[in-house]
Length: 201
Image 1 (cartoon, rainbow, N blue to C red):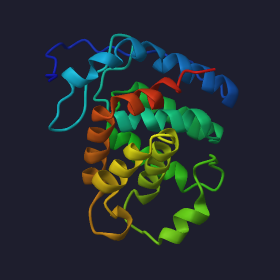
Image 2: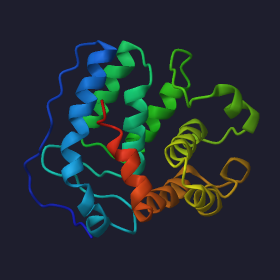
Image 3: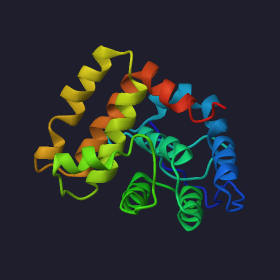
Image 4: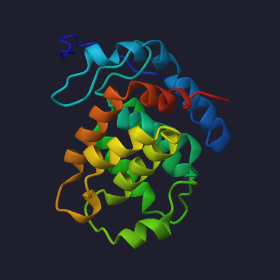
């Protein structure tokens, strides 16, 4: 269980953004690489009430979650315009939390220029879901399913215990993300495979 620090000093990671998507991806790899030395301790230091945790030294001060790491992986692979890339990095550096990144990601998914192999607009449109943050939840769902391929039982648990027909019911995004983060914490093998691919070349 992690408690809030009383220190006044803020620890930020300086990340240069040159405006080049390829270089952005390289910076994103370095941005998360130090986290891998810390990942094994997440389970014991996670606040299970919120499924969030504090970062390791070298990462920006804030409240992190496994879903945020998945979104960082998505951002690493996606094509954003230059302005969006800059704002995404700023959001990651300045006391990031799940709510802030959720809003930012969902807004980018509304842009015509945003591209990613798992952001299949036709499939999302077929769901006919107009709930707040539905696009970001859809991408989260697709990412977890994709990186859990080969683990049929985990995919079944994800569908049964996390998704639960979210795109057709009245539940909000926060409830989904709480279950998603808990799943990723408990399914440590699949969770690690998602996190580790963030820094693979």
